[in-house]
Image (cartoon, rainbow, N blue to C red; front, side, top):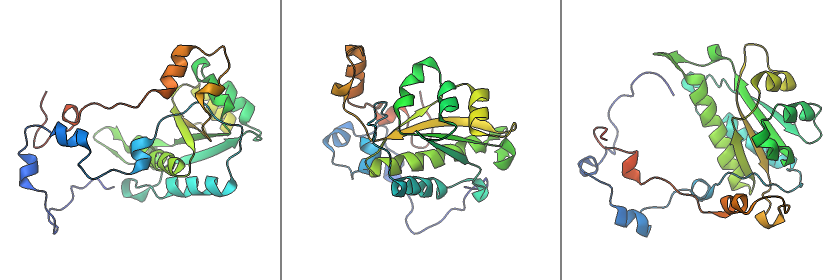
Length: 222
């Protein structure tokens, strides 16, 4: 990813008819007549119930490779990952940094803290592309996890200073996200104290806004 505007050209220009459409064809969209997107994207769902099964070393290495090969501004690769399994010396301190609502993450076999320095990424027009680059890298890791049969959930609920101290991030690092990974457990394995409302949330289908709510051709419109 660079900051310059890419040059025009190429052998396959966009179909002008596509940009003249007023609305998406919802009937076609709902019928599934469009080419399918990757199943790992379509079927991914954030999990917060995990089996105790450790993640194999080979699979962890593949997660790292997926994150490494993500695009970044001028190929700066500003991300820094700390992987914390159940046996890691920092595990207890990382768990102590979690907000009350993220207590479920203590059951995940693998927690991954991701952060970096603002100066290691690009900055333009007041936008810190460190955040964008790290998001791309984490998404690559999450999609690879789905491909390997692993579940994941990305979190924002943690104490920044406690997390930095737990994983050894320098003072000028920004922790950006904490991600849980593991083999998904079934909702019926939940303890009785878990409410029916929470169980329903775990099994309900994913939903997305209709395409025309967020995607526009030529110009944005309300």
